[in-house]
Image 1 (cartoon, rainbow, N blue to C red):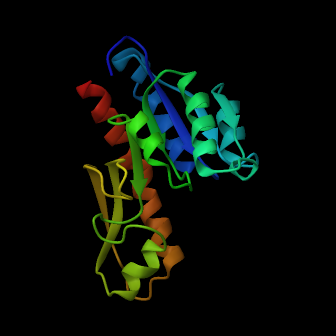
Image 2 (cartoon, rainbow, N blue to C red):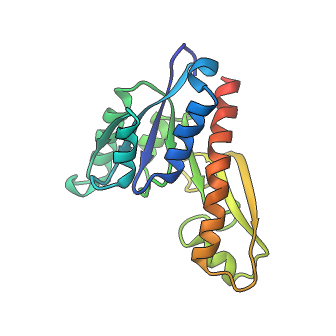
Length: 197
């Protein structure tokens, strides 16, 4: 992450609440002044992603590439890489981006690609993490910020947040409690990466 400008590109698929938390922290903690870092763009695989409108209102460049219009996962990822690389990213941040990325994409951004996953990895990789934690009788759940590798949800752990699983918890209630911690942890983990660069 050398150079004066450390551009961050965030990928979303929906409301972008983690993206918004990152943008707000970047402004409040003066990432531009302290690290030469800024959120340069927000890109989604869904035209209707609510987070795009929010990002645009903050003056951030946005783009949408509808993955359903591409003939293959490889074709979509190639187009996505082209859209990202316009911004010469120091970090590519997955924030609720609901696509499994091809090995070529992951390799292209090796060391620069970061994700947040709603479980305490290595437990409960994949989907339906909160219901699985409840079903297994876990007393604690949480979220993990990790580097992305070609193996799903298995990269180096950068930060974790822990929340209790309460009696009578539903997956929705647990998810909301975990998400509130994600909004604190994800920006913190990224700030630590920027400070080390």
